[in-house]
Length: 471
Image (tube, rainbow, N blue to C red; front, side, top):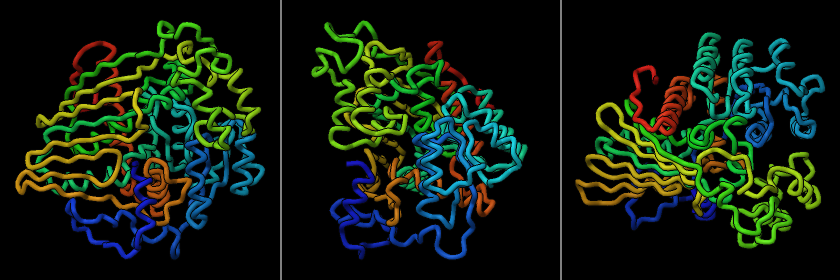
């Protein structure tokens, strides 16, 4: 059961559960994962931050729901996206003025500054130009991860934001996940002594990998970037977050394109799932992943990605699967990103970490972490509660991670981390307080550069030694 499922299950219980921060032992009932004490962010005299959306795909659209749920805190005043249907959707949702619609972000950047902040959620390779342009205009920036697809471009974005005195938050939502933050709190408290090793795994999910990294937008490095950066820069960033101020000094990595190749195409399989005679035996069938969901009236993600023209019905979905990329046989795509990868890291002081990204899993995104310390062991599997075993007392303790009771459904993805990220960004802009950002320019650049070094190790089959500049 993932963290958010636990939240809703728990919310049906009594609100009178303890709000104490005292840890619960395993035989105690842990009903306090819902935070009923934190007030809504729009309570009292609050400042409303005006925001421009650049790129209104699933991530860009997601963040706009903060304005829907907390209109006293955030107002969408403009949108730049090449798709007219997407612009019209945001126009109706947020009552945007006619002169603040743009099919190219450059049109918005040429105008006098008309918003306090911009959310940039364009495709990965299209992050650098708008980020630098809007930084020069004085916009505070929430930039979807990854920052950019080369180390040089990442450095340019960070420098532009610093030179122009604007706040930069990068969409490393997993830093904001209640479990990630609770883990960092426990580590800082010394509950397991000194960290010796972090073992962390991201199960991507077999059908999710086929959707996004074999058929989808992140399948090909020329069009996007390598999969460790596109998918798992979250996880390398989390490891750095938990390690604190320790610098990674050495990294090695291995990974391959497994299974999704022409050599593994089943005998008798066709080039498209809708007319394939062996489709029923294929776990990656587009009929299973998309069409069956739509037949059950489910047109959310990932079906919504396939129906990119804004029309969501069986007919348009069927047409898209017959003619578009999501109906292709997974063994005949132009994918070249690795489907499994391991990254080994050594930090200053001798601490080590090992990360695994795996496509072929039942779980989807339910990360598994074990952190070994000199006085104990911390485990987290898919969410709350966090389990700590104390070597001194030979005792196990569960630490639930709380989530606000007013969590909006549209911001509940990533265990509620989407809400915490956008709320922190809006608060930072409103109060002109960059310290509210957990994923600021320096920390993000550090973890991004480590990802690039890990990929260098994989490609060149070598151990990479990293200097103080991350190079």
